[in-house]
Length: 350
Ligand code: NAD
Figure 1 (cartoon, helix red, strand yellow):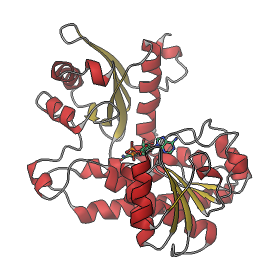
Figure 2 (cartoon, protein in one colour):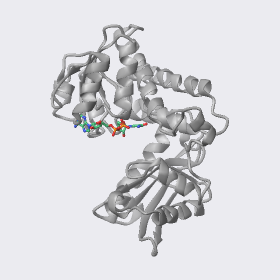
Figure 3 (cartoon, rainbow, N blue to C red):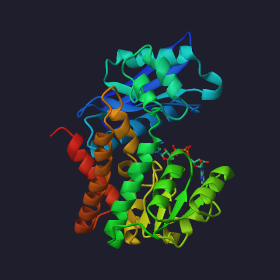
Figure 4 (cartoon, helix red, strand yellow):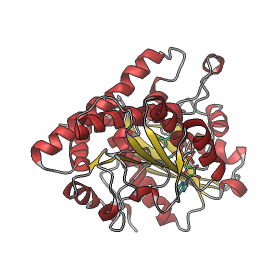
C-alpha cells in the first residue's frame, strides 16, 4: 500500500526503509514527530508475515511514542524501528550493526532502545556504531545497581497512577485493604505487586507462568486465580500488566472493578472501548500515560543520573492522570480522548 494512503500514516516526518545485502537486514525506521526532540523508540525484531504488516506496526508504534513522550513531559519526540525476521534464528551482530548504521544515517532524528526481539546486549552492539542509543546503563550506572531495565520505573509509575485513580474514584489517599487484581506478573507486574503489598493492598493474581504466580502468593499473600477470571473479579482495581486488547466488548460489561489501571500497552481493543468504560462508570487510566515510567527513566539515564529527579518526574504521572480524570468528568468525555488531546496540544506545532 502506498505510504501516504496507509491508514496508520499520520503525518510521520520520515519513514526510512533500510537494507543490507551482506547481513540480510530488512528494516523500517519511522520518525513520527521531532517537534519536542529526537524521536525515541524501541527497535522491534519480529517475523512479520509481510512488509505491510511491518509498516503498519512501525507507523502505529512510532505515533504512540510521540503521544507518550509528550504526555510524560519529556523533551522528546516519537519514533520506532522494526527488523523483519525471527530474533531467535535471524539475529546476528552483523545484522544489528547494519541496523545501527541505518540509524546513524538519520543523524539523531531517531534514538533507538530495546524492544521485543532486541536486548540490552544488542543495544551495546549498536552503540559501537551509533551514538543514538537511549537508556544504556554505563559502567558507573551498573556499579550503582542500574541495569538499563526500565521495568522498576514503569512499575513505580503504575503504582503512582493507581494511587491517583483511587483518590479520584474513591476519594481516599491510602491503599490499605484496597482489592487489586493484577494480570501478568512479569518484570512490571511482579514489582507492582510488591508496591501494592507494601501499601497494604490485597492482591489477586494470575499469569501463564505458574512459578510467577507462586512467587506472589508466597511473598505477598496474594490469591491465585484462573487467567480467564482475573478481569471479572469483585475488586476495586483491575491492573492489566500482560497483553494488550484486554478491554473489549466481552470484558467491559463484565468488569466489576471501578478502576482499570495497569502497565500493558494498547489495553483498549478499539478506540470506542474508551467510551464503553466511561458509560459503565469505570475510571480508565490511559495506558500510555500510566506506563510512561520506563521512558522517563531512559531519558535520565547517563553519567548525571539523579534518582531524586527521576522520582519527582515519575510522581508527575499521578498529577497528569488527576488532570485527565478531572477534565474527563468536567466535559463528560472518556479519559483516553482527553489524554490524546493534552498530548497533541504539547507536540503539535502551533
Ligand atoms: P513481561 O514479559 O516481563 O511480563 C508479562 C507477563 O505476562 C509474563 O509473566 C507472561 O507470562 C504473562 N502473560 C502473558 N499472557 C498472559 C495472559 N493471557 N494472562 C496472564 N498473564 C499472561 O513484560 P513486562 O515488561 O512486565 O511488561 C508487561 C506489559 O507492560 C506489556 O504489555 C508491556 O508492553 C507493558 N510495558 C512494559 C514496560 C516496561 O518497562 N517493561 C513499559 C511500558 C509498557
